[in-house]
Image 1 (cartoon, rainbow over the protein chains, first blue to last red):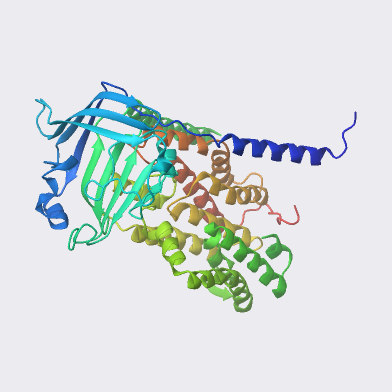
Image 2: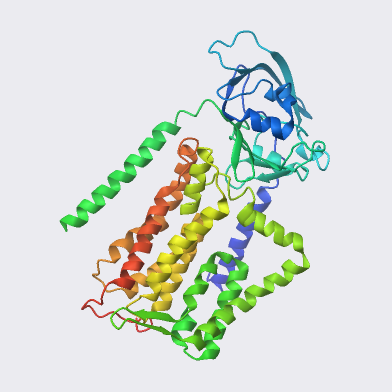
Length: 247
Length: 257
């Protein structure tokens, strides 16, 4: 049988395929935790300008919370105890060793439970993770981009999922209380695909970094990939130039 | 570009510029094409600068007119203007790590990784000043005026890709057709093809691969530098085309085929 107007039919078929592609994305995501029980997470503080932080937030900023005793070179360790999930909540309990310089961790400082709603759209409008330091969570459910995208966060936050799951925070002067912080403060928190905070930078105008925290363990593939990339690039350029000179 | 090449009358020059202006409204990636609409030429042999004021004015007016209509919206919704500036220039988006292959991004990624204080606008303006300046000087000194608009367009897109914070793969769609036309415009055996062809080949077949590799290396090495290398190579090729003396190979006009 000869098909009349094949281009028209092909166009309609393509449109239907595209529509099918879009509709197949509209499914309820099942959010979960990107790490497992007994996993160990260690963050390292690469930069901490204590004097500047004292000026910005007052001297009590490192008395409690996740920034307790924070200073440059120190590390914080989390050991995941338990993970529980039900139809509405994701809950995890972690042993925390707060920021330490020593090689031996010693006894743990506290056991903390973190929980999230399974359905991020159930969080209230203008939701804040925290109205004080560090302003962002150290982990989030996965897939993290979709989870952040569904939350109705306050104006404090700007979610950027284009390349890496990122939370941009702008804390305006006097946001916490009059004269705290003493000037506008910005935070860029980047998460890895497991929903774990991989980089936290708190900075002030002029991109002057005041606090820089990063996940201590870089994935195994990063170093060989980097060396491979640079070597392959140099070899290809060398061979190309050599071939052209010989012609 | 076809209009500029085929119709020399002032009305068509205006129409061509207005169409370019409309394209800038839709996606401002071609904004750096505007200076290359000027009909400005410095003859190196005669040491003489020649400017076609009337045509240059018509072209610039034609392109600016649709772009200015944006400012009506910005005036009506001031928040739109603030968000536009924040998203594109002053906010956290230009600072955050990404796989853009622009020179500006390589610099800001370096500063971000090593906590070096920087001002993203200063980095942008310096990059535009240096790369744009070199490109514009090359364009003004062009020795072959026949298809200069083609090379002007290519300069504009190359400067944008090398200097704007977010130069991503899909932006290459602005560049690759121009490189293809340049390949047909150049003599078949010219040495200049050694710069253009590898770049076109890389942008078409390999650039996306390096975006994937960036995800493997970014915690240690957040630089998608290979694309930058080929952009610089293409820019070098076009500048060389503008500056070298005419070879004995007779070049064909784009329109003659």
